[in-house]
Length: 405
Image 1 (cartoon, rainbow, N blue to C red):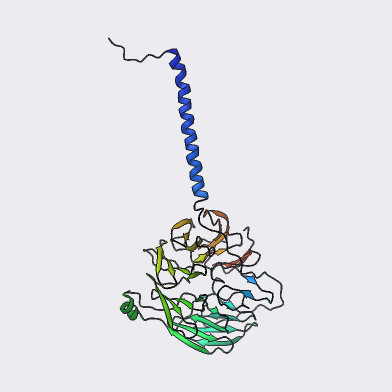
Image 2: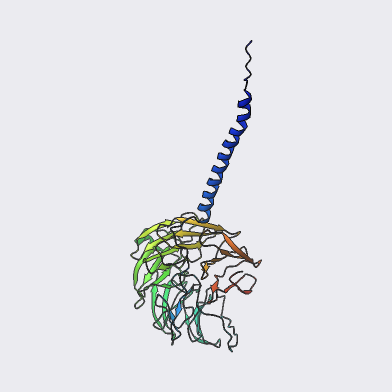
């Protein structure tokens, strides 16, 4: 009977382990190389994109702020998120003063962020339907009655006017010295939107998004009727209209070098982050999964810069400005309502309603540090000239923390 067992010579039995060791070493080294490549892709994922922070707004020798858009040059905070990139950063450094703290109770809640001019006058709207100008001592200088609540932030331009939107479907231009209303610009009604643009919307056309401005002085005003308006600031006439797919609370950020603007919508299902040119042509549509109430932020004005925004699905996302490509996403434990900020070294600061303020590496999308307040954070952080970070939480506390957390 034939013996089916294989027989090995002493030489082959000694050589087999060495051969297997060589094969194992080759496989191991191959896995090491693959792992290294994966790490490179993970930690330097998009080398051609520019995540560096734009320079802080400079201050001229006369003490004015040299904004790249026509904001009040004497104001340290003339619009929501401070500047065209909307990074929430000002060159102002904290200093002691002899001013007395003050407060003023309006008829109802205040849901918007105030703006302040160079002389200390504060401008803010209230749910009591009035828009207020407060003197530096907290007394009312003037107020303007509108037809509905005001829950969006105003803008101070370089010509002595303040602009704000109201729930009564109007944008207002007001003389900052006298409180005189110069013009009102009305949004399309729901019926007009359906007839003119073929878009069926909710039964509302409030201006709940904050007011922005382009380099040439054209105003930007997002509306609940799915439209973002550009308005002539001299007359209030409508210019370009940017179409969305839901209500827009997100103030467009502007790349003044490329002439592109970026905003997001409240759509919960479809893609909801938009890239447009200034003619009104949509260049790309990308998305979050869930409502976006926050305002977009640009890292810089490079063609290869990133645009960041967080959504109600709890993720902060970075998109390529030139294509809308998702570069990375960072997950929190609850929805994101607040807009991001950026420190001078590029670090991204993002609050979440999970109660935590996150510092995020702008290139990798990974956490650098976390600061937990134990209560929801819905306020968008402000950053001063020393990179100190200021924000409030749901417990009613105001925090100031160092850039290292």
